[in-house]
Image: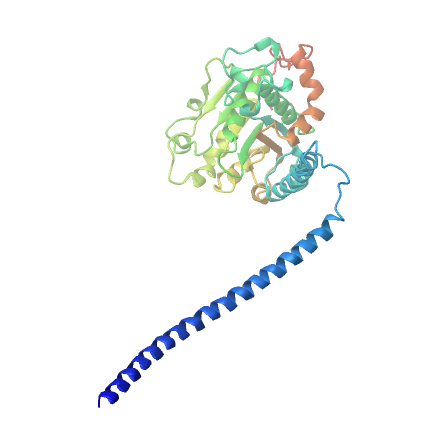
Length: 388
């Protein structure tokens, strides 16, 4: 038994040592595996180092300096000269295209030639806009004999600034009207337009002033109704009222607006009134409503020796001009022509017009060599006091 116990103890010791050896075997296996991994990595790095050394040795033999690099004197990009040239070319082309497109969309009447092409009537005159007359243009300055102390007023330019370019344009219009008919000038003149705010009243006032300055007896009739006379409230002798400071100029206002102006304008008293006015005055200038919106102009056209159509240059459309002319032609109105009013002479179209039509004349006026500095005198007509 003693011997059996000793043997059993020896077996236990051997088992303990066997367990220890198993643990060491596991650690040995792990360390061996790590060693093999590190060995492979080292071999790979060593091979790469050898390859890199061989490659470096081969390249170093083929590389040598040919020329030292020098910094450029100017940048390669961007090329400013080319860019500026291209910008100018593109800008000119684009601007031309936009100008042509804008001109294509512009449907307004701008120059007298368009009037003749559209409706076959002559352009009696071109009245420049005061706003377009600047100090930079030689043609836009006031004539030497009448340097103004204040800015001219466009509404009565022929009175406040008789020697200005605007006044001279109205005098040119007066001459065109006096020469518009072959036998004698039209005694009764109807001034109308297609749409409102195109300058009818301004044209009527200034034309009447220029006719009165000529020595003719002129009456301005604002024929919206003449309601006081046509309704039998006043007599015809009470209608004309003299204009202060303007000899030979008389005004007949419209009076209270009646409910039926068209019927009053077509009445018998209207015919009798014109007969009496023709006997008393040399010229009768009628300021009428717009033709397209009101029928009064077409009624008054029957009493007029000539009808003058006023359009706003650069604003009135071609359709409006055609429509107004069509309406007046439908009542057999005796058309004298068209006046382009309130035009912007700074535009290229009117610069051309004024240069080639009025350039020399206005230049002489500005230099003081032309006429127009003295009041105009009407030629004597013998002892005849009134007449057409």
